[in-house]
Image (cartoon, rainbow, N blue to C red; front, side):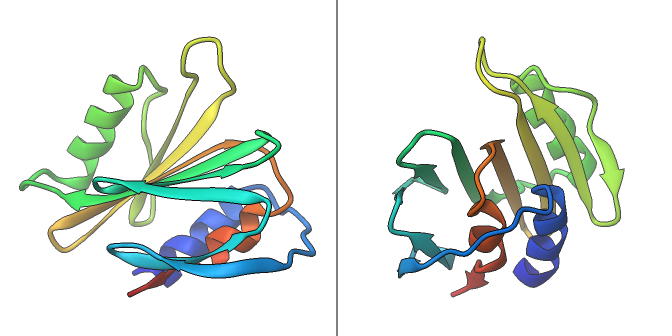
Length: 139
């Protein structure tokens, strides 16, 4: 499932060119990912957050139970909660944008695999986003 999502997200994350050297593969509860040495990563509950040290971009990945909700209902609920745009269907995902407060616009992609959803949120721009997203693997 992650391979398909990361392919979609790699395109979604703007065709960025990157020559990145990764500090380490970080392992979290549901997946592992290469985190560059100039990014920080933390896990709180079902969400992993990675932030560029220069604050140019961030990536958050939430993996949690659907509690019986459909993909469309989850996308609608998250978009409403975040005061985002109307979710648009694309294959097996929904995408929407939102702008927290006076912040930078964020792009969200949500997908469902079995009884879990995967919510990816990318904020800002950084040459390393594509490499990070492409490195995500199931545990």
